Structures are given as C-alpha cells and as structure tokens.
Amino acid sequence: MIGSDIEEETQLVEYTNAHFVNKLNIALEQFRGEGGSGSGSGSGSGSDIEFGNKSRFRKLTYNDVLKSFDQYVVSCKYSNELDLIVAYLDGQRQIYDFANRVTNLERNMLLVPTIGLASIVMLFAPFITQFAWNGALISAINSIVVLLVVLTSYLKLETSAQIFIALVDRYGQLHTTLETANSKLMFLENNIEQVELTTCKIREIEDKLVDVKMKSHMMPSYLKALFPIIHEVNIFSFIKRVETYKTNLVVRYRDVKNEIRYIRHNGGESKDDKKTRLRFLLDMKEKIKDEIIQHKNAYGEICGAFAQEIKNAESRSLVGIIFVGVQASPEQYDSNSIIYRHL
Image (cartoon, rainbow, N blue to C red; front, top):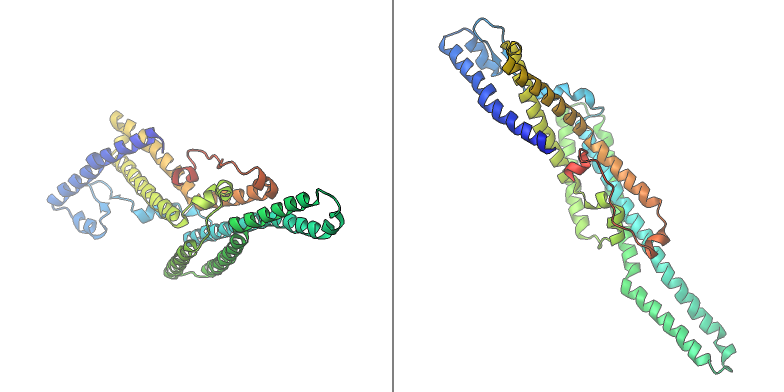
C-alpha cells in the first residue's frame, strides 16, 4: 500500500481503539449498571447491545464480512489454492523441459562437429599422405576433436540433460497427483472434508518438493532470466502471505464497517465533526473493499504470470539463447498488483 494509505490506516486503528471500542464498552457498562433487561441478551452473543430505549446495535463479526465477499469467488477457496500449486508444478516441469532441450542442443553442437571431423580425418588421411602439409592438417583436426571432446566432458552436458529429464518426470508425477486430488475436491460438499483433503495434499506435495529440490541440479542462469517468477517464488510462502494479508484486510473492513454503523446508529450524521469522520470511513471502506476483491483474484493473477513466462520462453530461439544469452529483465508489474506486493 502507498504511504498515505498506511498513514490513514494507522490513524484508523488509533481512532478505533480510542473512540469506537471505548465508547462501545462505556455504553455497555452504563447500561448494565442501570440494570436494564438487555444485559442478559447482550451477554449471549457478545455482539448485540442495547442503548436505553434505542434500537439494538449489532456488531458485524468476521464471518459476516467474509460471507459478504463470497459472491466475488467463482469456486471454493481450497480449489483455488490447489489450482495455484498445480500451475506452479506445471511451470517447474516446463522449466526443466526447456533446460533439457537447450542442454541437448548444446551437446549436439559439440558432438556433431567432433564426430564429423574425426570421420573426415579417417576418410581422407590416406589420400593426402603425399603432401608435405598432411601432418600439420591432421594434427590440427585431431587437436580440435580432442578440444571438443574435453569441452563436452567438462561441461557435463549429458549428465545435466539426464538430471533435467528426471526432474521433468518427477514434477509431472506431482502435477498429475495434485490435479487428481483437485478434481476430487470439486465433488466434496462437506467443508471439513475439503479442509482435510487440501491440508493433506499440500503437506504431501510440500514434503516431496523439499526432497526434489535437494536433488535438483544447479539452475542455469538463462532459466533464471527466462522464468524470474516461477524460479524465485516459494509457492507455499506466497499462499500463506496472501491468506494472512486477506485476513487482515477483512478484519480492518469489519472494524471500519462497525464504526460506520455505530456512528449512524447514534445519529452521528447530523454532527459536523462526525460527518467528516464518516466520509473518511466510507472512503476507507471502499479502498479496503477493492483490495479484498483484488486479493480474491490473487491466485488467478499469479497463474497468469506463470503462463506468460512460459509463453515468452517458448517464443525464444534456442540457438539465440545459447549464443546471445538472455538478459535478466523480469516482467514489470504495477505497484498495486498482487505480484509486486507479495513477491
């Protein structure tokens, strides 16, 4: 969030603690002290309060606010999380498949000349023995052949290609496993069963990914430049950060909404000082609301970023990557985007 928003939120928290909650508690204590009949009902839920002869004031709960935003979500929350991890696993599979293709091309570019030059020497050596320069030519060609063989061995391209293809298979298996679980999740209507399945699969995939990454080969520099987000993101930390941030947004929205309702309940709209406060709260409420809706689509945005990086990589020439290289120029995102904020 920008600096002005942070300052406004700080003011909001201070005001809420000093004004809204304290006034609410004072009013409640005064009412209870008067021995009103509403104290019994107020103690039942903790959110319903009566002020003398005034109508009942009910504080919104966290779940009340959360339910009001469910209309902005197409599928269930747990499916969205699994969809994101499925997209991440597919992105990792694409990365290592791309690395395997580039490595195989590099190996072929060294092996084909080696085999060709060695064959030429063996084929034409008997026909150039009568020339004085035959020894020098054969020695030069043999030197090039030896250099290419040593370079192939030094770069360990064949070993790297085998490791990359093994990682492609491993990520493919994890992708298939999680995709199957995600499909099963859509048929579960019980929320507890959804939570259990999602938690179990996320922990299982997280443990397996730790094992896979420990066995992973060194990531080539061109892959880090081609896939800056897929390579750098820790998908599980990203999910935790987004969910924590969404929870904080909902809590702030609830507090703002409760204060607005409290002011209106007590006729604050008729007073100039509270009119200014009410306008500020209404503006803050809309900002927080827009941010909550934006974070509801956070997983779709990061999935789109994964797909765009894969598309950009596929459009690059493998030969150009080998000879020209790849400049590290990650996609630029708006400062208000989910990716910019959490990555």
